[in-house]
Image 1 (spheres, helix red, strand yellow):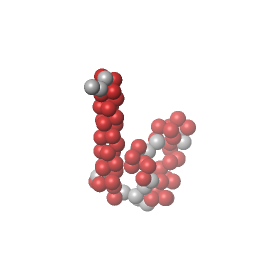
Image 2: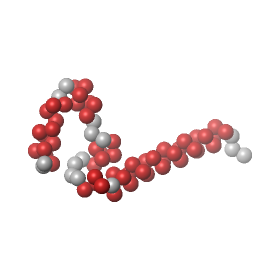
Image 3: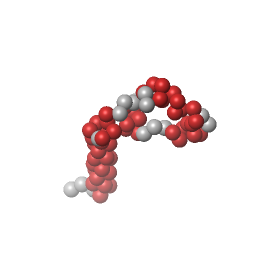
Length: 70
């Protein structure tokens, strides 16, 4: 018989695995998967909060339009 801590850890790991699979599934087959851009941004989102902290969030948009188009 497994202990409660082992069963709880297995349940947590199973839930983390399920969430990772759902993120990958939506990134690869979702409606926004056809839009060009960095693959990592499809998984974790654009790190806009990092740009806000650095203070250059107003300068990011034109560069992205030049790189990926309208």
